[in-house]
Amino acid sequence: MKPETSNPKLETPKITGVILAGGQGRRMGGVDKGLRVLRGKPMIEWVLERFAPQVDEVLINANQNLDVYARFGHPVIPDEISGYAGPLAGLQCALSAARHPLVATVPCDSPFLPDDLVTRLDTALQARQAQIAVARTRDQPHPVFCLCRRDVLPHLTRFLADGGRKIDAWYATLRVTEVEFDDEADAFSNINTLEELRSFERNS
Image 1 (cartoon, rainbow, N blue to C red):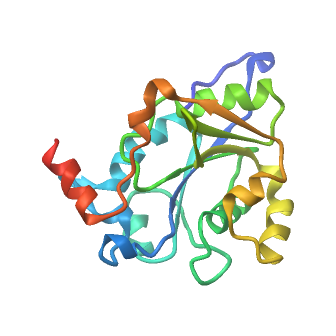
Image 2 (cartoon, helix red, strand yellow):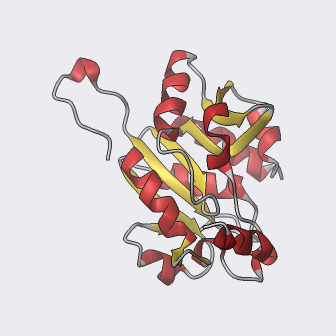
């Protein structure tokens, strides 16, 4: 958890963290990616170990195996939109359920994410008065690694209601700042397929 401070002038907005695990896992053999075992434990457990200490509460966005995800000790929230509508649908339900004014998201298939991710995104978000801060390595943005203000929810809901699904298209309508993580590029490696999973196992 983020450290508390007794001086209100130094207080920063609290942050809800959301792990996006709402996909179907088609490229992972039809099994939820977050529940695939890597080096002896489910990938979501690796993510939780790095992500949970960076935020003030954790939510898990999932659309199947809800009871299994609930065993990790955090609220599980399914998409409000049916049909596996993608990460924006997960973000929408997270913004609706979040208790805090800022919401950070990470995917369930990046088990080695930076342990200073949220701090660096938050610093940029506040300094640049952006609505969303997105991680970037070199010329590659990572839109599912983001920190956004909860008050973008109505705008996102309208975007989804109009049929929008592409995360880049939605970001283009907002004040977005990209935050460089060139020094931690490998931390954004994700595991999408069984072959990638086996490769990480072999290199452990």
